[in-house]
Image (cartoon, rainbow, N blue to C red; front, top):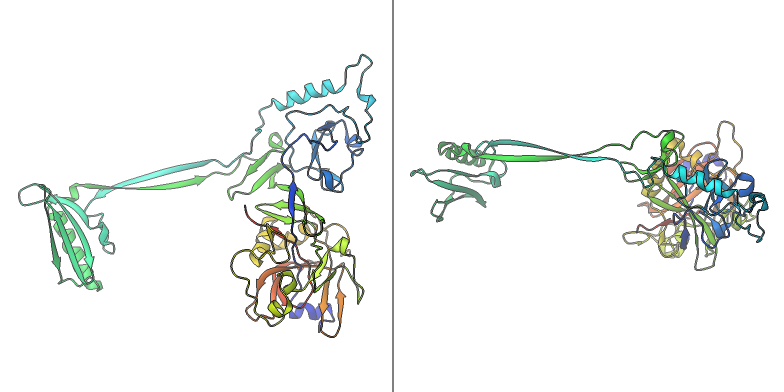
Length: 481
């Protein structure tokens, strides 16, 4: 049994799972919110805070004129948006508040709104030389060609290259083509008048290295003796060169681009950084709404799955007392995460999941990530040495000297701990210290499966494995379009 933290890591560290079924509703790229009651532009941060940031407006952006920056709603609070593209057209900052009242401080005595000046200023900015479309790396194709005589172009190990035109005994062009049938070499000669003649040579034994050597020398000699080398063979090689995006500097601040791997990036503080898109989705099965985040090429749930099944418990518990499902989501055995019974996929039972994505406990269009997908997430945020700090939420973790959680991408991994599931008893461990998420990758022993592990002490890993009986968190990842 696992009853100490040290023993748990000796056996192998724990994991957390992803999962959920949703209908997506995210950032559609519009800079002018429609039907949300939000203006496209406000005068300052104080005015922005008068508009509620809730799940109803998650992903919507509002431009703050005083700061010259877009702010975005993550479902709870306004944050500086990764997309700093200035809206092409904005509503007046005197737009009505959500309570229907107007902002009289933006109207002059003569009836002219002070937002007219703001609009003029905005128009001047949008007419600058900054790109308005997504930048892509420059691609050039270089073609290098070489010419060589037909005889010298022949390759000993490739009979298809034994093909040339030489002069016959009458000085006319004759085309020679060589093929192999089993051990035999066949030479087909097409004369200048169009007639063909094929001869079979059995003496070479084309199934032996020595036979091929002899046949090649004879063919090359035939080619050269008839002047076949006077005919040139042209070989061209195309070399595709992908140049990086231009240097990120102040003039490109907020511009979105695509890097050489096809991942969206944004210019921020003189550095190209991964572009993060926030959204939300609603689980059709129980109506729960979850935040989502797109990091690189993957779209993840940004909250732990909280869909109730058998063999699942509320995360964040202590001892035998369950935690808070609303905050931490649920902890699932591996079988439950795979959408199977314990008899089908539990401890010691091989799980026949088939090929492709494993939907498991996730909704249509989403799946439980594989170990590889977890590793890809780690790579996207800078690798194992930095993944933990960048993926962990800034709240609910026990403070640890020397470790600071950034939640740089809004993934918001929470320390839900794990549930030790025993046929005799069960209890909760390490809430506040661990965030472990199941993967859909089973080990060959059938007793264990892989998971992604984050810890308060920095021992973060995308490829650990442990008993399928444990209750771990689940995050679903969206199926590729």
